[in-house]
Amino acid sequence: MIRQVCVDGLRVALLIMVPVICCGPSPARADEAAEIVKQYPDLLEGITSFGAAVAGDWLYTYGGHKGEPHQYSIENQSNQLRRLNLKEPGQWETVATGPRLQGLAMVAHGGKLYRVGGFTAYNKKGEDQDLRSVADVARFDPETRKWQELPSMPLARSSFDAVVMGDALYLAGGWAMGPAGKKWHDTSFACDLSQAKLRWVELPKQPFQRRANSLGEFDGKLYVIGGIGPDGQPSTAVDVFDPQAHKWSKGPNLIGNGMGGFGCSAFEVGGTLYVSTFGGLLQRLTGDGKEWGIARKLNEKRFFHRMLPLNNHQLIMVGGTSPQAGKNVKLRVIELRQ
Image (cartoon, rainbow, N blue to C red; front, side, top):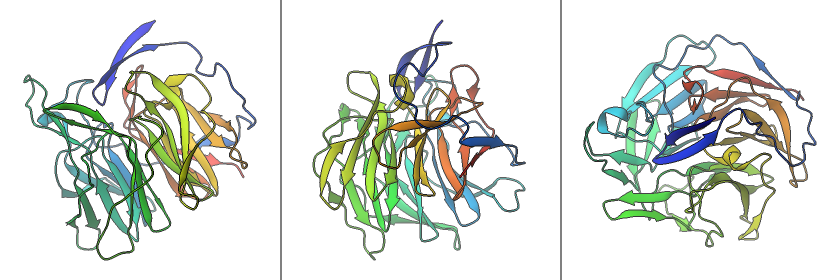
């Protein structure tokens, strides 16, 4: 059965009920991770394409799309920074507000949150869509509960991802939307978060153009995973940037068909890089970095979600959607078997 979905401004035809694992190696056992029940409260509303990070004992989410698929408007974008205590889970609380954004990235460093990019809808429901990517960067201090504006990115950017490696914030992928149309980025940037004043440094030109990708770290290298290209084709491609050698190289493709890399989410936990993909697979990169294995087939399929670390042996799945079930408000914990 063919079904149309539209996420982050793109309509994609999906073939439902076809196994996602169609080819490729799977050196890892599919029982290397287990889903466990933990009594975390649901999200206050279903969201996709949002920012999320864990800082201290708190899980934070910011912004996101909360309306019907492919309906982008002021009313359908969140401007809420919300958090949940992971040690003593009670209720979600709104700790601050800001611009209405989706397609943004958010990371944690030094106990603070960094909100990067995204896009804002300027149209109301029923009006022609007016979607504009932003270059804004801001830091949130949980102690003061206030945002501080930081030096903007050199270019407006949305539908990308960011990751912290040491003290450095890296961003890659994405595009810029505005009245003049869409520009696919072939640039990546980094900045040192330990410096009093942020300065964005451009990396060597990307050998790819993809958005709706994820970023991860492994062995001191930056992994740009999956996404979709200007030709409208979802991709399982992986590109790797080595900060020491200052150059890009190709990494191993994800397992599965192209949709597996679209709207995926990645994070390194306990020295292993994991990726949660569209078809409900939790994939892990082998220790030599040469191929992906299947750690587990998850009970729920999600994309345009966030997968974050609880500790060195647990991951938590937050938000996202699936063509079959729609937006997912449940939080699921994945126990990684050592």
